[in-house]
Structure formats: structure tokens, C-alpha cells
Amino acid sequence: MAKKLKTTTKKNTKSKVLKEPPVILVTNDDGVTAPGIKNLVQAVKDLGKVVVVAPDKPQSGMGHAITIGQPLRLHHLSTDDNVEIWSCTGTPVDCVKLAVDKVLHRKPDICLSGINHGANHSINVIYSGTMSAAMEAAIESIPSVGFSLLDFSIEADFEGARKYARIITEKMLQSKLDKHTVLNVNVPAVPASLLKGMKICRQAYAKYEEDFIDREDPHGRHYYWLTGEFVNFDKGKDTDVWALAHQYVSIVPVQFDLTNYALKSKLEKTWK
Image (cartoon, rainbow, N blue to C red; front, side, top):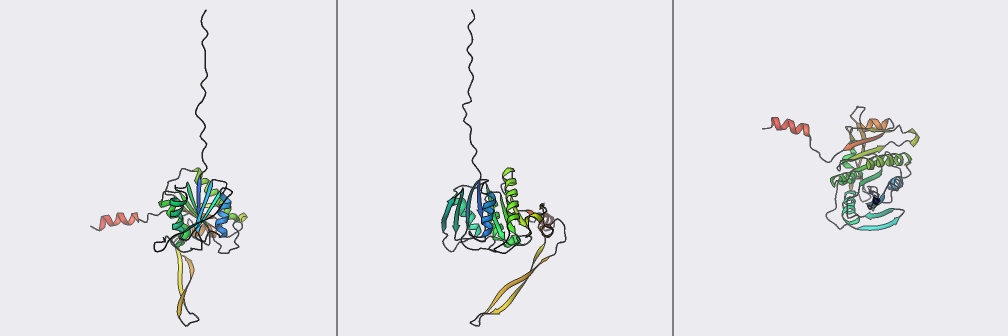
């Protein structure tokens, strides 16, 4: 009689590896208590582990400044509902550097900066602490985005900005982005129901025509107060200024490589 063959079924011994949620670094330049950053955290807090490292006071217009002449201090404010919050005595760029080196001890999966109170379209990207924080993250090989709402009011309506901050963050987390990706996102100051959607744009050539008002303090000493008018010199319909004026959320991909490649090629041929 033939022996009955014993059959065995191999069990899958490999345990399922649970994917860890993404680490989302959040910062800004308006300060850790600003309504804008609170709205940004609210928009994305269920998309991953959120760690906030933001300035302890407003740092608007700081650009890419870093602190080198005085000590920097970090203060842990709270950890609650999957959100960890720290304040920093430095600039927005300092916040990103310290977050990576001393708070996270690793690079986050993405960095979100904002939501800024006021526009960061066109030339504002150069001066913006919001965008410099995002740019610093991109320099550190962290895909990043800066969000701004065209409303300076402390009582601004952030509903539309929250909606699109979440949409864009989800798209970035789901896409295989270059590690140096940085996006400049601006949201018109209109009710969310009036926003027409998103437009990928180029940066408009627009700037402030500045004026320094000459004043005198109570002690009779002169000082100057910067004022100015925003002027758009660019009539293109593919710019961030055009998109915002027509109630679209503008998205401008920017970069920290400032090389003018067209001029470089020209000078290589003519300057010998």
C-alpha cells in the first residue's frame, strides 16, 4: 500500500509591518500663539504626528535670518491630541533648524509653514519669514510648503485656508516629491464658498513702491516709518497676483537655487 503523503501548509511567518504615520513639522513667523498656526494644526492634525516649533513672538519680515549673536531657547508648551508644541526664541529659520536637530532628532516627512496673516505672493517671498522657514526645510531635504492668507486681521476667516491647506498637504504626502520641493501657497481673503479652486502659477513681477515717512518722537528725535503701495507690473494671466485677484488659490513652486541659467549660458559664450 502506498504511503499517504503528509502535506503541510506553510504559514506566513512574516509579521505585518505597520506603517508609522508621517511626521509633520509645523512652524510660522507670526508666533506660536497666532490664529493662523492654530488653524493650520487643526487642518492637518489627523494626517500624522504633528510637531509645532514656532517663534515665541512675531517674526514677520525676517526673511532667512538666523540667530548668531545670542543664545537660543526652546520651551515645551504642551503635548496633547497627537500634537506636540514648542516655542523658540529665535527666527523662523532657527525654528526649523532646532526642530530637526534637537526636538525631532530626525528629518520630518514634510514641513508646513503658516498660515501667515497677510500675503506672501510675488516679491514678498524674498522677505517672508513664513517662506524662509519652508525654504530652510527644503534646503534640509524636507518637502515643504508655506501657506498665507491675504488678510492681516487677527479675526480673519481661515475656513478657506484650512480647506486648501489640508488638500495640498494630503497631495504632498501622497505624492513622490523631490526632497527639495517647496511651494508658496496664497489664499484670497474671501469666504470659502467663493474660492474657485487652485492654480499652479509663476511668481508675478510686482513690488512695493516704498516711502519712508519722516517723523519726530516725543524727545524731538527724528525717525522713519516704512510705508508703501503694492504695484503689479506683470499683466500675465499665469501669475499668482492674477490668480488671487480672480479668487483662485495660487500655488507657486519656488527654489533656493538662485542661479540665472539663461544669463549663465550667455555669459559663458560672451565673457571670455
